[in-house]
Amino acid sequence: MAEYTGALPTPTPETRPYWDALKEHRLLIQRCKECQRAYFYPRPFCPRCFSFNVEWFEASGRGKLYSFVINHRPAPGFGPEPYVIAVVELDEGPRMMTNLIDVEPDPDKISCDMPVRIVYEDVTTEITLPKFRPA
Image 1 (cartoon, helix red, strand yellow):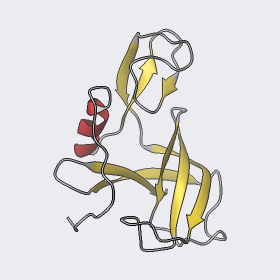
Image 2 (cartoon, rainbow, N blue to C red):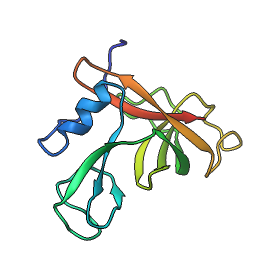
Image 3 (cartoon, rainbow, N blue to C red):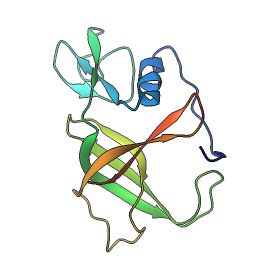
């Protein structure tokens, strides 16, 4: 594990299952048991119908690139520049902000709707970050 210098998330009671699953290289997201809508980011109620009748389930870790930007500005802990900031639409429906890795940061090599899959980056013994690469 290389020394990680970026900002680290602080798990909360609502997000702890998500972060614990990432440490096990599993992607957990939530689904409403009332309207059946999957959603991300973790929260105790459905953002669509506001029901508290929600559950965690394991997502496939597959999706498509919804949007991206190639960042050329220095940002401590994120380099080296340039790098790709991405929004991935999971096969289960929700979108998540992440980084696209293992692809040249060139708009000719990246396109919206390209298939992607999750990669787990163990940055500390307590935190694993979800990133995505072309599938």
